[in-house]
Length: 122
Image (cartoon, rainbow, N blue to C red; front, side, top):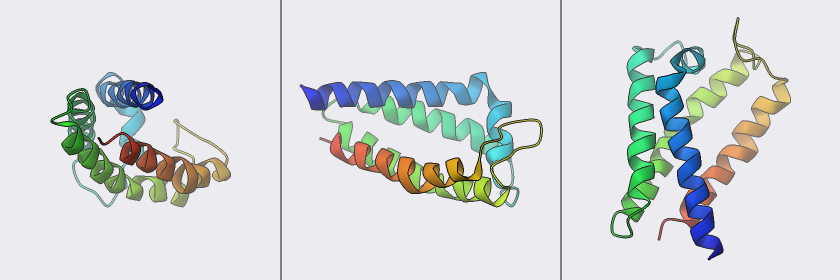
């Protein structure tokens, strides 16, 4: 029962995050490293993948594919977390946090999301 609840909470989290890429894209653009081209496309594809992969988690047959896809996606997001640290955790006219928050996001929260995904994969 707890695993099912964790799965549904995670699905909700991923759906919210994915949909937010479309509702609030200006939030994400400055978080995409400047060395990557086409930030609008990266943001849109990220949102589509987050929503699509989260929806796969509802179906037992597709759950492993959704979970492994999310794991890959989370790994692909690591450069964004590193970039946020490199810009001192502050986007001009946008998100600014203490630098320790950016480090916690990279070294604690992100691994916990990976572990959470791993735990709900089956």
